[in-house]
Image (cartoon, rainbow, N blue to C red):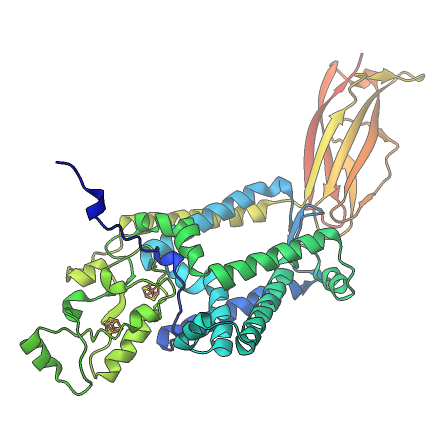
Length: 464
Ligand code: SF4
Ligand code: SF4
């Protein structure tokens, strides 16, 4: 049979993410929690760079100096093992939380969600409610429209600029950054990064919004692999809600059910209108859902108006929805929690055992040894010492295995915080005091002010 293409009408609907979504503002219990948490996280983000510890910025990821300072601890590129630990802990913590509470990260804590919430709040205040915004966007350009749009985008840009400067102040000392910015003494580097992060924030939170969650975020794609039947998710109780249908406030629910087979969903469409990703949760679980609970609050409001029991859309689990007995804590959850615990303990132990001192010793490559005019044997080394602490420290250097004289070395070697010092030194000893041609020795480098800061570096001493 020949297929007649002409008879078929191909209707291509734009994907949800390609349509503009006009979110309806919604209040409710979960939205109150979300707003409070958003405020708390934003204030924390803004405040941290201004915290001072012992006269210095308490948290600073100083890329120029290659050191990350977190209160009394300073981390160096050599401490990258800690970064690996933090990444592992973050990954397992995310797996644990996702298995237990679903996409709670996306709905409550993710910066993309928090910033979008703030930008949408500004939009509501300037352009009005959902329908007013739709009308405004469709209307031809006028002075009023231009004023509203300009005001909204100016505030969005200002918020983006403040976000960018706050973010950069985690990497550039806050004092110098703001002095430079306020005195318009912008270096090319600062200008580039401020503009870059301003545009990123403006684009992501102002324009892309849910498109980041739907089309760009990889987490949305693999999260379902972590879900089990006990995972908390936002779901519509279809058994209770279907079949859906509009009705009047005074209609008797029991009568409607018996006569028309209507469930509790009054088909008000509010759950769709408030959804930031533009989905209809009544169609079942969808990867676009970020667990923000806006649809729960909207539906609860409708249920209250109709005097129905709340919770037609609720935080629930697949088990609870199908009426099955909830299982105990799953093996997967215990495994993720155990990994988190192991990573945390390992990092605490590693930080406790860490010494804020790095040293290396290199022998002179040209000569194994030399004999001076008195018959004394000399070996030359280069010692490199890095003071990884936050205070200037004096160091002593000793070689306990030999009764040697260390030539040209000051009694106390002063090294500034964060500084690396190269120390050329020569060991001199009467060759008759050595049994072997090759003697294994070690340099003990110790901070005089804090004797627990001590390192041992092994090398060899040669004689003829
Ligand atoms: S379906 Fe509900 S919980 Fe999911 S994103 Fe939409 S409003 Fe938020
Ligand atoms: S908000 Fe509740 S009642 Fe209204 S359409 Fe959605 S599920 Fe039905």
